[in-house]
Length: 253
Image 1 (cartoon, one colour):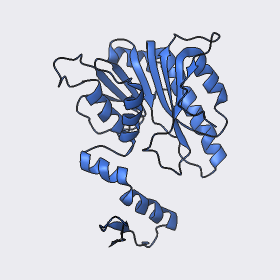
Image 2 (cartoon, one colour; image 1 turned 180 degrees about the horizontal axis):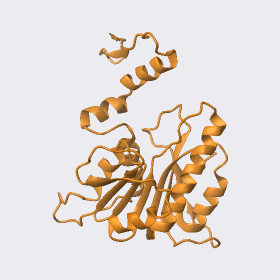
Image 3 (tube, helix red, strand yellow; image 1 turned 90 degrees about the vertical axis):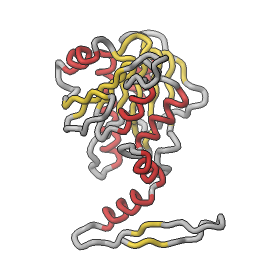
Image 4 (cartoon, rainbow, N blue to C red; image 1 turned 90 degrees about the horizontal axis):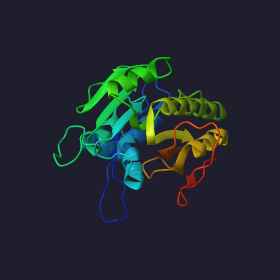
């Protein structure tokens, strides 16, 4: 691994890491590693103690929509490696560090084991299991104010297939949210723009008062990922009036 010092054009020199192609490593893997090592959000996350650049995505979404409030009960589906939980712990005051504010709860669930996170309760759980919603409500001591998901299906290398897989995953997360959300609650999830999620968007607008589709600055420019933020859960409605779109947020697809 070597470093170069290209001139930034701002009167200073910046280090850029270049990775040598190792025996047995594909070029695509080398390029991915090089991108990771030079990604400013990855570098920042490492310095600030967050478990990945995704922490800044949920931070941006909450800065804009303010759903991680002190005292809130939050469920993070597919929480590994834990960056979203780390942000939620601070913002809902899960550790009670601000004695003047309500103390919230952060519950993370994932299929794999996750390293402990101070202020968060982590469980190894398949949220698709029949009794998962009852378990989560039991652990929370009630219903959730926020259900959020940064899950992504394993990549197949085929863009259309990957899009359908993540839409199916988000729809499953939404169905789970319907079962555990408190009235007035919020659902936040990653999606891939691609045109197959319109039925889900319709369902969201029927069941939430406000639905926004946003691409945070922390998302890579070449990524098709966007995030849906649905606020004001009405209680599960198969039919009913539509919610409002955020006029400043762009549509998916």
